[in-house]
Length: 185
Image (cartoon, rainbow, N blue to C red; front, side, top):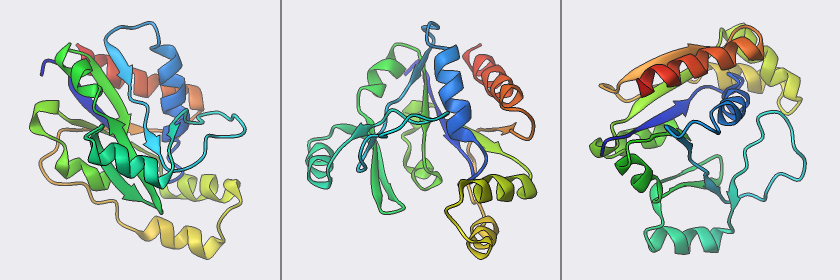
């Protein structure tokens, strides 16, 4: 395949959803890039916020049927939900496009070599991650500390680029766009 899959991963609080949403809009008219729309077993967002992902909501049964029918190039389970990247990304890769996808670290090792995977790790200093997670108001300080202590292990041997998101959202988006454009050549 002439294109390549760019997997965007990162710890909670790194801001990857915000950066991906802005990058998707900034590159909407650039034919070199395609942003994969994930299928997820959760309802569609009822309210829009910065970085909200426009995913394809599927029931558990519909997801299982799609998976069994071979509809997904990649699929995984995390946080009690099922996620899938549509098989249609293979046509985009064959046409030489950069396919950008929000993936789980757990699925990286199963990405076919033909996808020419590059991992973009969006990250920030631990104190900033903790402050961002706390700002969501969904976890106690103890839960946040436990979440941050989990080691983010990536499979060995992957091509990887790091995008530090420790400043303004605009600066983080600029860093992500610069990295994506460099990968496109």
